[in-house]
Length: 299
Image (cartoon, helix red, strand yellow):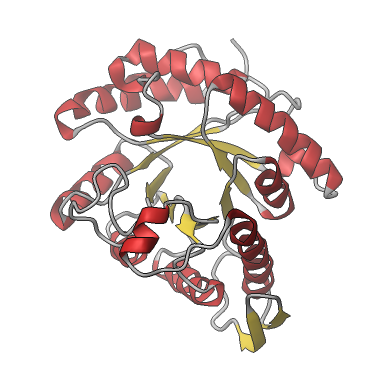
């Protein structure tokens, strides 16, 4: 079997990453991130929540401070938060955090950004959660601000929600013109924003849903004057939200899972791992299955 292609005809170079939720201890997080990197996963990710969405009240570490520390524990993997909630931090603060972490990681940061969605945690922690229209309006403005600020030395910005006055981006990020933007988007308006700003677009759903969104992303790129091939297509496997799928059931299950989503246009697979007592299958998949999938083989 030769190299596979996306629906738009571009070559598909598969990549694989791991996303963990921050319920493990600091020691376990360090050890497991090092282990995931040693297995060859190209990227490692955290989530951006203030409490666990499935079980509110459980211990949960904050993403960006944790990511800064974990960046010093791994050497090769790309790192990021999938995705940062725009409702938690002013985008100018997020930009400064991103540049700082880009330096700490020696240019390995992927800047994930989303609009925000889990209303109960906003209520718990006293954070505003606007109606959907304003939520997306704020997000669109934040993306514009981040793109401009991170790509320039001085930035002024006058928006409805955010303002900058000759704000310096010093030191500049290591990655130029800026760290890659990873945008989580599912609906039409959000996909259009991803088509304007994203280096990587991330979504989740069934193979049919991912194929249909990929087609909408292609169309949105054309509307915004971008080459669709310039946007990497990524999906996140969330165990609690994709109960009909279990790629960790076996090596064959993983191969089947990747094959179906690859045909729908997915280039990058970011997966939440199974419980630690089932890590043996992660090791087997990483060693015996993923190299063949990267090479375009059936497994």
